[in-house]
Amino acid sequence: MGTLVRMISNDGSVMACALDSTDIVSRIEQIHKPSAVVTAALGRLSTAASMIGFSLKGENDTLTLRLDGNGPAGRVLAVSDANGNVKACADNYIVEIPLNEAGKLDVRGAVGTDGFLSVIKDLGLKEPYIGQTPIVSGEIAEDITNYYAVSEQIPTVCGLGVLVNPDLTVRAAGGFLVQLLPFADESCIDKLEANLKTLPPVSTMIEQGLSPKEICERLLDGLAPELLEEASPVYHCGCSAERARKTIKSLPVEQIEEICNEDHGAEIVCHFCENRYQFNEEALREMIREKQQKQKEAAENAEQKEQDQ
Image (cartoon, rainbow, N blue to C red; front, top):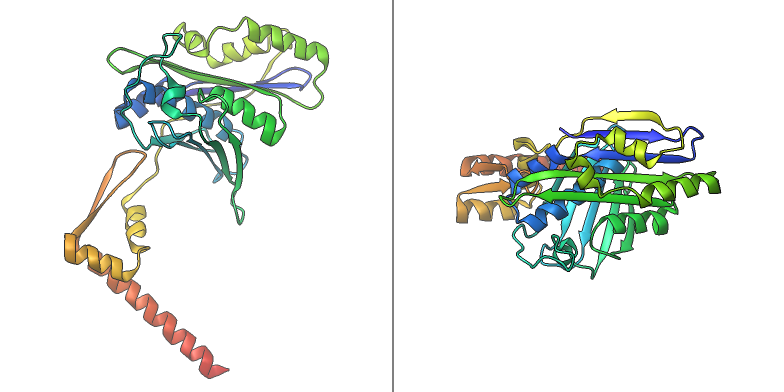
């Protein structure tokens, strides 16, 4: 499980959040078996989603971060709940491209920059909130920072990092978000900027053993930080055989019949955890009978209403 901490300056003008997501990103690597650069992209996006999702108020609220940058990794997606639990997927898990000019994994090259970052908040209302900003970097942290500046008008700095071993396992992963609240004064801003200038890369701090609390304390050094919340998020999918069954049952009767006649069964594969749910022909025909019975009852009820008028 991960370790997530949120702290605030004593005067309430700056909030900082940090997450050690090494275990979460390791689980992503174990499930999807991506190439190193895709592990880095999924890890960064999942870390950001977990930290942002943790700020949601409702127990059933969800947050989705989606990068559509037209890069070789295709669409990259991460979904978090209000406890910071997260799941992630990509269109293409194997991307082999050279290191960037700094000799690091080229996340920008894998994600692409010709597209948008979408932030989708499902708060249980009639329609989800959708914010969308152009991808400005493709390195993800800068894109999160830009989203907050443009879409939510909250001065924010985001840091994200994933270190991948030569055998493709995850050595360290984590991130931070620091945000100015409306009444932050100039002296507070100056201290924060000074702290950020001397802050090592977040993955380096995680690798060196710094805890999320210690990272937040470094971010808010000189601002008398106070602990707000702690959490232990995990990689969590939430799929089930029943949800897979509902997916098939949502298809038109004719389409389910076609699957029965041609394939004599169906298999649903979860994009987030790779679990496979198989349904034989008899199970599919039972779904058809249930749908036909429901359609019959609906028609009879409609006819009865017409007669009563």
